[in-house]
Image (tube, rainbow, N blue to C red; front, side, top):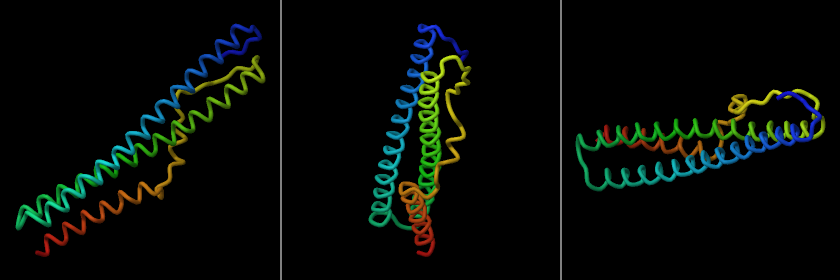
Length: 152
């Protein structure tokens, strides 16, 4: 974005940056909702399959359901990791666009480079968040279920 001292150019730049900021906020909210729904589905599916395998199945069916449970929990865990990284990327985008808005208001003559998404923010995502640990425990439970059913 090229700097300008004309008031209409400054306002247009700020409006554009506000639009980018609002988009980042909206996308971050959507991804957070997806991550939460992902957790609900993983808990519901794992609970239902654990209850079903221990109550109604025997023999080879137990192993097949246990393998399916393990694969599904791994898929949910990987999806959560991806969502978690994206949330941090969009949060970084929000912070950087907010900072750019302040800089444009403070010094409108300076040229600014604006990115629509900051991939660098994904590196801030921790593998030790509580929600990630829930998935790790679900995967461990699926592995334990598989080992248990193989031992029968």
